[in-house]
Length: 113
Length: 120
Image (cartoon, rainbow over all chains, first blue to last red):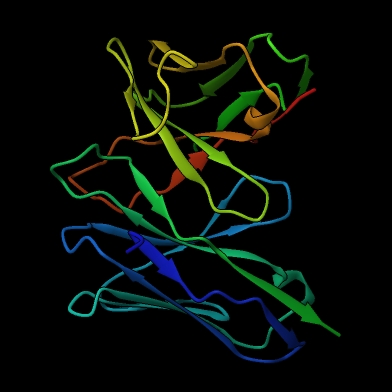
């Protein structure tokens, strides 16, 4: 089983649509959770951290369910500029190297006019 | 915010030669940096953890004699791909996180711009 597993995608949606990505992780001791965005041939950039209480940043809402080891990202009112690969990322537990991150395989989103 | 700079951004080399990639943290000290590799249409795979002043920790399946890592200062880590072959062609990217404040674990990881290596 992969350490971090995401929806295979790809997602192809029209502008204005709502799209949801799901992710599961295998290490129950994981301490930090993120969604990163990666544009073609570029480095990943942080979209948002994910907190147990759930958090929202504009059109983006992230949820974390520690019991189910499940993370989600909801994008509302999709824009053309949202087209990218979305990476579910999980940070190591306190016993392991602090900064170590494990990446999901990524889900490609294409928003079309 | 914190910035990580990686150089070069692109390199083409002949098979059998060695290539050095530099990763610098510009406004914070990084005792630990991470090196990833990304093949086309795949996710980032951690290759090794670079520790300042000590040996790097390599992930399973990564040859430490082929991918030499040096972390001689708190702001610089280097990855040298020795005797490169076409199958080493990939996107190499480094990362560092600002040391946690107050035990917070959810601080952002910053990535270098990546190095696209093509071995011909």
